[in-house]
Length: 479
Ligand code: PLP
Figure: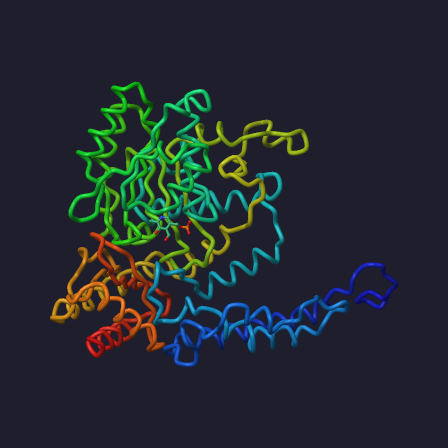
């Protein structure tokens, strides 16, 4: 075999720099066309592909090629087989779940991350990977008005996790070990609202708790944690000799965007020394706007906090910002130093090794995409993104209020609207099916007060007021 320079080689044939340049250009061209379609209204692609289970698998060769194929063939298959069978999360009519924003600078940051090919488990395995991460997380503290205790210049700081689920898991592990670890585990109790995300339950199971050790705190009429009920549950458990180790609050619940009373929750936690973690996976992005900083009430007292720039802040998955007021309990839980990872900088205690702030050892260079986004849009650009969607949600809420067939199922929360059909669950389900069958918009549902509820989560990168007005019209047409 000859290598790309014409010499003898036993290795594979790599792309030459010129071939890479050309393949890269054609890939970015393809992506630019793909995004232009979403920017133009997404008319060329249906949001939910019409694909039967197994269809994509069957359309592709059952075995890998023995010899390498031309790159153009690969890209042609992406265009012909993969993109059409992909759910169009970036379509402007996608209002399901919560948004998973992507943006051109973020995509390019991801490309550079792959190109640098860094495994940033420790400062010494790539100083820039660690220090850029520290910097952008400090930038987010300022941009979002987060408490100073989350800055890197004190005992606390931030780290980028792959997901809010992983961030909450780290909070669970740190709180468990701070409260006594394995020896005390059977006596420990964790509290979260009945509306908390399912990841909290999964995290406590992963951390070795049983389901019975998780207390589901009732919620008030707005689906926020009832702090009085929490106080009672915690006091009763404490009096019985149990150890309340963690209270996981939510700012912006998945079902309705409810905001738990964090300041009051911290008061309850302080009385028994419990850790408070705040999961603001979706809503946290809105705090980039000063007018939404009431979401941060009480945050200066919590032990940990996370929100996902990969939801509503123009940064593609995965990028979850996780902050701790004091990193010591986290690293006490998660740091194991085998001989093969020892190095002078770590031994001297001069650097942060983010591998000790997460469960896996390996780390991607995720800070690049966030840095690209922050520098490209600026804080004002991010504010404009959030404000456009919050304003569109108000207009949609007015339209729902004016429709006698519809009623709000929860107070409007930022850009999340929950409503139902006045005729009951079947009519609500039919309405959701009708919207989704239109191909112009995609909604998902939840249950609130044991009734079927349609959710509209406005937040897509390319979603404008005009798209939301189209949705309002569609809802009127279908009711
Ligand atoms: N917490 C809340 C409130 C969420 O809404 C979600 C997902 O929508 C999660 C956690 C889980 O997020 P991730 O996918 O980053 O784990």
